[in-house]
Image (tube, rainbow, N blue to C red; front, side):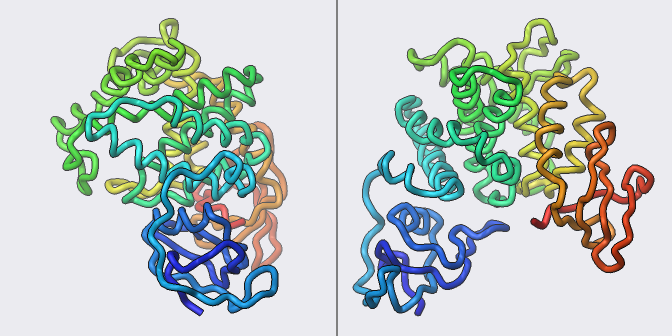
Length: 362
């Protein structure tokens, strides 16, 4: 039966994937509904959900009249009982609410920020594949909100790979979460523009790290390294970045990490003015650009961590053939050996420069 999210109760069983404006389901088939799922469905403006006629305990499901959206935030205890993806989607909607408050002139509620993002940061090492694949949930319309959460988690995961302390992983994650809060101070006619930006509009966009810094510098509970990470996430080692154009010896390590996390998620996500790219193609570009602009150690850790998880994955190549990754050579991590599904032929992408991995399927 099909019901409105307002008719759902905990224990309902979802019978088909619930899709929003994302490439991946918001709620998957066979999910047993919990309060957080109802909240997420409301936040994503889903109008109809297909559910079974019986609840998970075997009793019949008798839909009642539509209830209003649940009031208040999901509790920490409820979040801890849900899976990583649901927590991520809840965090995205929480970020959206905060972003709208910043647009309205309110300051940063750091306690609310920590409640939303710290529980996720603490799980990144157990959910590496999910963190590297968060771009699948990003839509053109909600890009900013997904981006803030994804950059936080990617930054924390890179810090973990660099063997930073748990405290520093949390701090760089918070810095990543707040790095684009200054976008709330830029006219939406510019941030949501579908076509190419004019030079004036691009210069306005380049002001967002400064706006972000002005927001975070007013938060007394934040450490200075978080503020620097926010301010410097678009700086480059060679001094070609913005807003200050400072170079390597003046850049804080948090800024170097967030710079890579920010670019990786942006390039792999669908945006209003630019199509997404394959994660492997993005990693290849980052490897080519690492000398001069990005910290090579940060790039190497991202590439090593991501490609180490890729063996056995099913992928789609740029010529639309389906293949499976069978071996990754350490010197050429973005160009592995793959087995073509239609013929079982094994080819090494290192020797086929015209081919690249277009998409990770599973």
